[in-house]
Structures are given as structure tokens and as C-alpha cells.
Length: 252
Image (tube, rainbow, N blue to C red):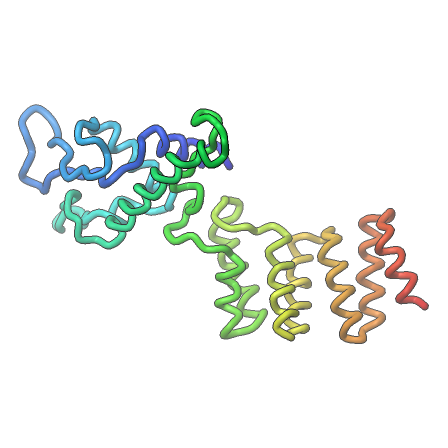
């Protein structure tokens, strides 16, 4: 995790989960300062304003959202009722906070460790800066269902443009390799190769990508292409014994 994610997770753990950092509707101000927080259903009722707001800030960072994602906050001239419970996202947040609390309570015993030695879960553990966490390969697969590898690769580039180098999605070499495997399993060898070709744009020295490319081209009967791919492996990794054997067999 990056330092930011760790801080977010630590804040969530120390705060012991939260339920809406809410304040009364406009007009409920009290003399001498801001109104007290109301409708705290999971946070301790006596939580200070600073504690609640710190926890809420951790939420927004972990999910990459603003306060109005869960709260009724329409700005100047609009309705601003932070205590309202009408948004489904707020209800979901409360449920997830209880779930995280339950998991963190059970983890030490399940792992046979003390509470201090147990890594706890929090919003950032799964969300990593996005409201609805999904694996990038699942998002690409959904895109590819309607447009093949071209659409899947386009979705990867779109997400990479927006989120790289953050932790929201895995932009490592394994992502395209997984998509290639899925396409090949579905009988779409050309799509499988397209994912591998896209991968070397980002990972030009990926031995795994060129090795997979050689296997696919061998299966398609493209002997020259397979040899070229294996030679690329050996260019990157001259001591790769498996590649040497593959090349020797291909040249027979």
C-alpha cells in the first residue's frame, strides 16, 4: 500500500468504523459554534466533531468521492441535510462499516495472532480510490463481450489514463496475460494475440508475454512467428533454458 492508503486504513481502524458524519439541517445552529453531530448510528454518540470529520475524510479518500456521494449536500441554494438517511449509498456504507468491524474482531482468533499483530481491513483495502471496486480484468471482459479484444484493450487504456499510477487497478503485465488466457480459452486466438501485442507496448521486456505469444502462434501454425517470439525471449533472457529447448524444437 502507498503511504496514503495506509494512513486511510489506519484512520478507519482507529476510528472504529463510522456511520455518517452528520449535522442538523440548516437553521439548527447553536450559539458559540457549529451544531453538534446528530444521527450517529455506528460511531459512538459522544464522538467529537473532529473525530467524525476525520473519519469522513478517510472515507472520501478511500472511495475517491465527495461528501455528496452518501449525504444530501446540494450546495448554496440547494438542500443540505447531512443527517438524512435517504441515499442508498449511505445505508450501504453503514452496512460495510459493520462488516469491516466484524471481520476485524474475528481476524486475530482466525489467524492465531494478537490484535496488534493482525492486519486489519478498511475501506481502502478493497476500494483503493474507486466507489465500486472491481477487478480490471472483469471490467475489460465486460467491454470485450460487445467489441472483442479491441474494446477490452480500449477500456484498459481508458482506465490507465485516468487512474495510473494509483492502486485502483492492476496495470501490471499480468492483466493482459490474463485477458489473453481468457480469450484463448474461449476459442478466440486472434483476440488472445491482440492482448499480448498490447502488453508489449507497456512491458517490452516481458518474457512471459513473448513466451505466451510463441505458444499461441505455434498453435495457429505460424512457425516463423513463434520462432521470432522465442528469439525475443532469449534476447531478453539469454539463459532461459526452456526457451532454448523451444527454439531448438521449432527449428527442427
